[in-house]
Length: 452
Image (cartoon, rainbow, N blue to C red; front, top):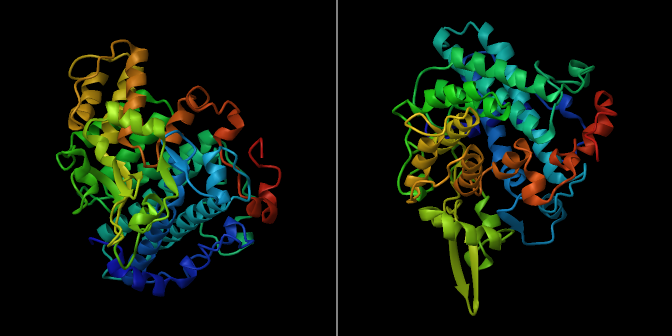
């Protein structure tokens, strides 16, 4: 399947309950009450349920989650008056922020969709649904659940681990917050199961075995498990289906799904991604809510090589507006959401190797760092010591993933948000649990993150 949009209408029709209310951020129901699929009975409804789960991942990655990944950091500033964006930009989030509420809700919507598939599909007896097809569908659901809990964990810390379908409050009563290590343990368990069930394939907009292994590499990086991070990154890098594409802009210039992509979410004009509207100036039909910062523009132009293609400009009268160009399909509105790229696997392995004091040689951190730099048209790094190499990798990640969901989370996981951004109150390194869930769910009462 090349796009979700080809079958999304059928998925929504078949699973209205699954998808209803997912965008209603004023709904006072807690996450336990998010609607589940009414029935999965055969191959058709199982595949429709899976499309519904992917649709929910699309919902939170089309705007909200990337915004939480870049706007609190130093690459992007908010250019407007909307309070939800101002709070995010100023690291002054409140529990009633609609981006926080919408993201939390929709991630749990995706998790609940995955839970239903995991619970039901293995027991189906439809003769059309072969064992291998059941494994594939269930493996994709395990991956979606793993991605959801990983994204919750790095944003909110430990979260309630709901592992069964929930249709009413009573289905999930008594579930308290898990710790962050417990949350990441669940991500690992789900990825291990996904690896077991998913096929070896090069599909880039649906989870396959290498997709699960790539997310495992990222998970191990966040957990500072350097040996495992290196090993799983190497597994993906060593697969000939994935490669750095040149020039840099090739991966975000149609046609998409290039060898750069390990996992991206596909959109279409019928199933649009409208994030471009927040980046484009009004002269190009956008709202220009997000602007590259002056410091980022200068840094990218000085050190970014051909990644300068991330920036574009338009002049109206005497005013020139510089804007982010990663999402540039304003006509067709089919910009992908980039979740895992092979460049990230190179930089994960570089960081893991540097942390193990493996700096030089073919199997050293500098080799991986320089592979990414060479693709950007840059000379090899001059970093020599471990500290210099780690700082060079941090800088490379800032430029390579400038407008993707990385910069804020990178600085938090390395405990550098205070030094780089001046956010010295470490309580602000985690997002608040939505007020609506705290108020509606007695199991979350008293479990709000400190500082909120």
